Image 1: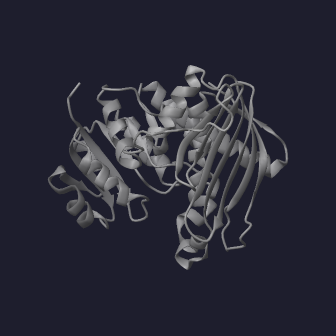
Image 2: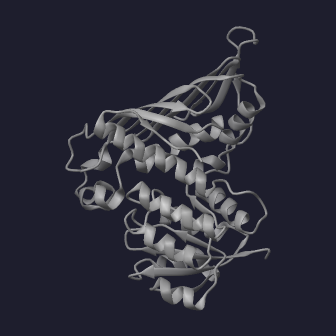
Image 3: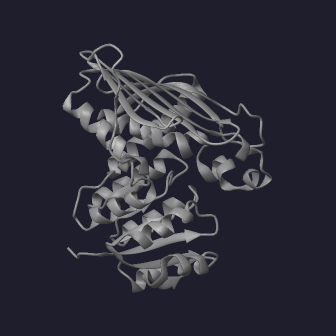
Length: 346
């Protein structure tokens, strides 16, 4: 394998998180060059400014790009309704994919993409960047080592601001329309914590029940609130509260109880990771003392690039990506039907 990778970046007018992806690609030493496909050419000037000499060529048509180029990885950030075609095209040309979530508006679409990726021995990885955070990796290591014994239960909260939903620009954007986004808060933000619930505990969600609604009453046809009950394949239960509730900022929490103690990740108070063990002196709280940097999209993109260069295992596999989306679409069906949904685990 080559020591550095050529990354093809596929974007368009409504792409999300370009303010994170441009600097992530610029900072990644193992990216030798970026080839841009920007349909509409809206972001070319910004890309040139942020990527500098790493940006070598620009196309406005994916087919033209693949006729002339053979990138090592495709980074795709588009509306959920547009993503499946772009991902399919990249896979068809033998290119591993790193895709901004949710990358589909139905689970059938993503099932088909994963089947194609598997058939071509390629990885299709969703951009669930929190897996790379140092405190998340530390929590996963402790649980896998048995520090907390058998897991009894998990609580997941991911709350963002209701304020953004009051904007007319938001009302007309793709995040507010189910036929363009696939869903609302749950599939855009709650997805991160559902994935972490499975990743940290090394367990898959097998059953889900719950409700979704538009509690704020804004003119959206997606949910701004979701409350789920979860069953994991290791036998324990959990809950997720996912919604746009606050005036500003985010509040998020992960708490896990086990037979030997508990851990808590309370991002609202800056307590990234703390834990207590049953054998400790009463009142003893251990705190994660290591750096919580780097975090966010830059280390996530770097890890994806290193995985296609076969320098490390992927942070997220196609099957991991599929499992969290299966969980979300099962949750939507549970809310619609009032019946608990079983989720297949590969």
